[in-house]
Amino acid sequence: MNELLRDIYRYRELIWALALKELKIRYKRSFLGFLWALLNPALLMIVLTLVFSNIMVISMPHYAIFLLSVLLPWTFFSQSLSYAAESIVGNGDLIKKVAVAKLVFPVAAVVSNMINLLLSMIPLALIVLAMRAPFYWTWIYLPIPLLALTIFTLGGTFFFAAANVYYRDVAHILQILLQAWFYVTPIIYTIDIFPAKYRWIFKLNPVIYVMNGFRLSVYYGKLPQMQSIIASFVCGFIALAIGYSLFRKHQDEFVYYV
Amino acid sequence: MDSIAIRAEGLTQRFRVIHERPDTIRALFSKFFRHKVDFHEFEAVSNVSFTVSKGETLGVIGRNGSGKSTLLKMIAGVYRPSAGHVEVKGTIAPLIELGAGMHHELTGRENILLNGLLMGYSKQEMQKREAKIIDFAEIGEFIDAPVKQYSSGMYMRLAFAVATEIDPEILVVDEILSVGDIGFQNKCFQRLERFRESGKTIVLVSHNVQQILDNCDRAIVMDKGRMLMDGAPEEAVELYKSYATPEQVELVTAAPHS
Image (tube, rainbow over all chains, first blue to last red; front, top):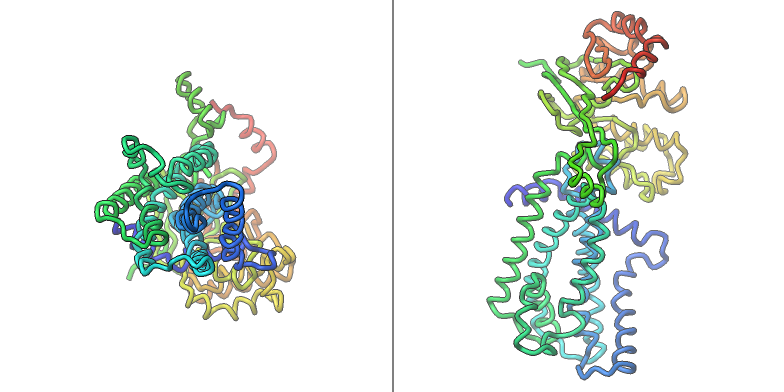
């Protein structure tokens, strides 16, 4: 773990340059450029508000905020994984020609999506104000779930980046997995709609704890319980340990398979 | 004082030559159930040992497929040797392929930074050298245009300028100087000459025997992964010419691979 931190620090400039490159390419030739990162959640909110307040009637105040408070971090998570799964294979030409630390590619994928997430928190705050929903002081707690989610996401990116080098099916399986995962995670609903005796099933989902932190602090104005915070970090570090050890063990072989 | 720049001992690189690419899970399963090994090991470089002194220019000649590039990639740290080891003292700039780290959507200036970072230099070092690189590459005002708009000549000039302007102690050049127009080639060789004069170490792979004779202090001849000789460039070129006849080539390709 020390080694990982040291390498990330050592290659910070390269990781940053690669992350910016990714963002630049994502928004290339678009007139609004980086503004899209800000506009996306705002436009999504308009759609959501129209759908849920006029078509489907949900008896929940400020449903858009309820949803976005978890959907934005979820998007960061799923996009990071999707990008990272292709990050080693996609940079195969480079890996075959330059002796470069392999970890910079998945880490850069996480960093670029993190920039997106942080940018999208700005429109979320504006939406809260625009909807005249209460703006809670618990927003200042957000760095904690952000950290836990980043650790968890890094673990996943290392795992899928390495696995996809050996079996290209992995990137496809990941898309299906993320779809299914989205629906079993309380993002568009709360677990309160399920009978109490089934709720324990949701607690097997490792992202639920960290997502809980986002929703509580943004939508409910509360802080998560200590067990929940600890669980979010435990899940994060387990994912990171598994993903990074797999990645580290095989990184010198990637060059033969890309 | 130790005056060795590169010391290679028993360098060996084996590749798995996969007959039926098992890069999908389906192929993996079928392979698993049939218990069939559908690859063979191929030794691209076998037991090669040599040293290069500081300030020396070593030529590497041999036919296509003789293991020259694989040897360079082991020196550059792209491949980890299957056996043996290589010791490199000093900073190394590998020119395995010009423009390996270039991204077409980024501008020339952004590519200078990204390339330098990929080769392990800091942002500060690259900014210091930026003006000189632009000057040598003769890119002019195109420097802030995306690289995809460059002519192939501009592209190569920029890549060569980046690799050599960062002032490595050891330069590893693979076959790249056979590209570009006469003017650029001359410029490149002038720069190599300056490198030699300033006491830097160069490893030069080339098919062009004249380049070897003109530029190298010593040369090694590679054939089918083995090193045939290590000696004066004149003798090496003589040997290379003597066996590189069409009949020989035919004989080698006809040899059965089990």
